[in-house]
Image 1: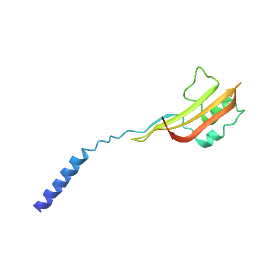
Image 2: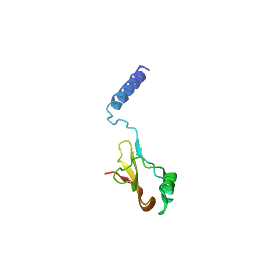
Image 3: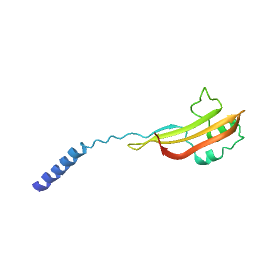
Image 4: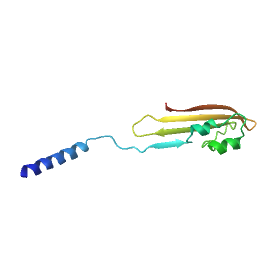
Length: 111
């Protein structure tokens, strides 16, 4: 019985000591930008107005002061010890209607 307690105490002590050696702290996932859903992005068509686009995917989080004719939707996810994942969509407007759409909705590793 004495041997059992000694072995149990030794096992607990060893497990505690080894767990203190682990050097991988937890990092909370960080999401930034507009979440771009593929079905909503696919609903954007050339000829739509800015209001119609905003009703479907929302307004962009960052407005470019120098390019009022372009809306950029960027989403970035950084998870615990993994490469960052980024998606983007850019919409160009001419006279208030969509004239060009660029989509990169497949998750890619950010540079």
